[in-house]
Structure formats: structure tokens, C-alpha cells
Image 1: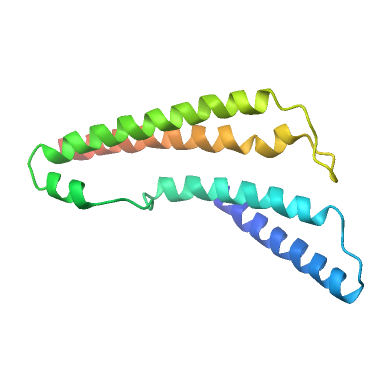
Image 2: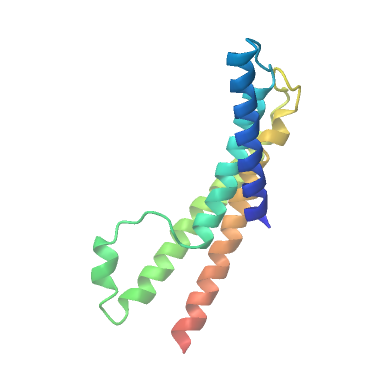
Length: 147
């Protein structure tokens, strides 16, 4: 579902920026709200994209230590547990503090007059989805190790 939203946001961002650039250089008149809206769409696209990258395990990793530990019989299990706990802890903290962050926001955007709570609500949403995905990945890892 979120991949469809990312594609729609990408197309929307392309058209808004292209139209604004064309109107700026052809008609010498730019749209006031286009820069702000494109910035907000870009924020949402990136944080939704992070969910996809996290879910597909495509994050950049240093593989030096893990490659050596995975050769040991018990190394892979220990490494999976440590990774789950570290990533889960960081995501839980980010979720908690992003909820606190948007709860104190009371201002609106300059040209669109959109509450900034709406713009930055993607922070706790994306962190929550990644936290749940981390738990699901760990459960899958445990199931696969039992076989």
C-alpha cells in the first residue's frame, strides 16, 4: 500500500516542481505554495521509502564482524538477538520521541497554512511500522532457525 503512495507522491512531486519551474521561467511568475508542498511531499516520500528499505533488509551495513560471527555455530543466533534488541530499542525511542515532538507543535506552514502536526505525523507512523517490522523479522528469523 505504501509503495503505491510513494509512486503517487513521486509523480505529484515531479508535476508540481516541473509546473513551478515552467511557470517561473516561461511566465515569470512562480506558485507560492509549490515549494512548500514539494518539500512536504519529499519528507513523506523519504520516510515511507525508509519503511520499504527496512522491510526488504536493504539498509547499509558493515559486514566485517557479522561475517566472522556467522561462521560460528552460535554466532548467527547471538548476532540476530543483538541486532533485534539494538534496532528495536532505537526504533522504540524514535517512536516515543517523535510522538512527543509532534504533540508540542502548534504552528502552521507559511503558505499552505497546514498544521505542521500533519506534516510531521509521518515520523511516528514510519518509526512504528519499522518497529513492528523489526518484531516480525525477528519472529521469522526464529522460525527459520528452528527448521
